[in-house]
Amino acid sequence: MPTTADLQSFIFSKAYINGQWVSAESGQHFSVLNPADGTEITQVPDMGATDTRIAIEAAEKAQAEWSSLTAKQRSQYLQQWADLIEENIDVLALLLTTEQGKTLAQSQGEVRSSINYIRWSAHEAMRINGEVLPSSRSSHFEYALKLPVGVVGAITPWNFPNSMIARKVAPALAAGCAVVIKPAEDTPLSALALAHLAAAAGFPAGVFNVVTAQHGQAVGAELCANPIVRKLSFTGSTAVGKLLYEQCAPTVKKLSLELGGNAPFIVFDDADLDLAVEGALTMKFYNSGQACISVNRLFAHESIHDAFVKKLTERLQGYTLGVGTDEKATHGPLINQQALHKVTEIVDTAKQQGAQVTIGGTARTDLGPNFFDFTVLTEATPGMELFNTEIFGPVVPVYRFSTDDEVLALANDTNYGLAAYFYTENTSRTFRFGRALEYGMVGVNTTSFVSETMPFGGVKESGLGREGSQQGIEEFLETHYVCIQNKD
Image (tube, rainbow, N blue to C red; front, side, top):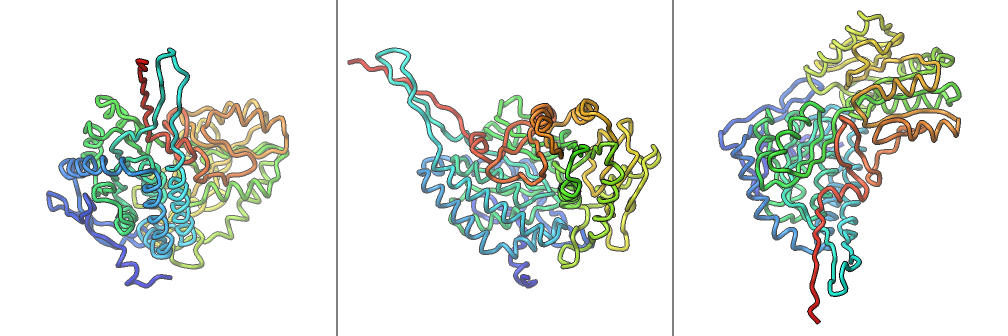
């Protein structure tokens, strides 16, 4: 494990704009806290609209030079950035655990995911192709280019503060776009560490900018309203996403919105129960349930319901809550007090409405200020408040169902449409539900499908656009058509 001195060398207390480490124009700062014990890690600048405008203008100046580089040159910058991240993976993982709370093993996995996204984007930079078009007239030569959209604003969440930057920024950079990043107020340190390594990789000043803020309304409003910003990529709640969508309308920006989820997890009567339990444990409790694709509603067929709950509860007893740096800990705390209060209220309300707790159900104040126990709720019904609530914590409600049509209707009965999962050995059902579930991503007998090669994103109120795969870089490109008249 890296030493305290190693960690301190990657903790930055200023924002990064135009290749410089800078304070807020106002001189204001805010504290970044360790969620495991509530202690202050450092303070960072509390920036606003003016600071953001300066960053946007720096990105605009850098845009011309960056976009004029060859694809190979941009690819080499990205590869160098990925190399430096890989060389420092241990200290980056420790930093991530310190500011976000997840275990070191999970933090290591997240940083590796970032490296994969950056390397994928580096290769995709070399595969941005236009096309020669069929001539509309014999005297015309017509073709289409793929050009960078322009300056990109990226607003990233606290639950995956390292990889979410890589997923947004790497394809933008590969496409030829300069970026302005606003990281979540709870977890700005990973973003600043990545800026440090981007500078070490030789990125020109202004290509990679990080604006920190405790309350992001002013920063977000400037990113939306400023006409220099031609694309906004946001991951966060549906409520905030709708607000940004509205604020971007006057300047008609391109948008990528990865918003909330209400993921169903369906266990049919013919499912491999051990495999299904493993999938539920992985996708419900990873990062202590703090993921937009976490299992939110678990539907178990009435014939296997009791057996499934028994296996799930038994396996949870082998998990250990604790500080992320503790080797014995399998899961860490929630991000802050607000998150703890929300999860506590969800469980208390569900109990009042008739849900039964088979394990957990309470905050673990003996461990620290933000820990909540692994919790399974049975006797859940669609009429309960939590049926339409994104839990974002280590709590899984289990609903009974009896027929395929019933559970399909229940699974689709939500305004969200990000991820869905189901377990069955029936081939016909596999194809029918794979198509009929109204979600951007569907896992069949697996929950492990997120990677740089797949198009990550949702439908309905879960957002717009895709991250990862070839589609991910297309989000940062515009089609530019040219028609040449031949006079001969």
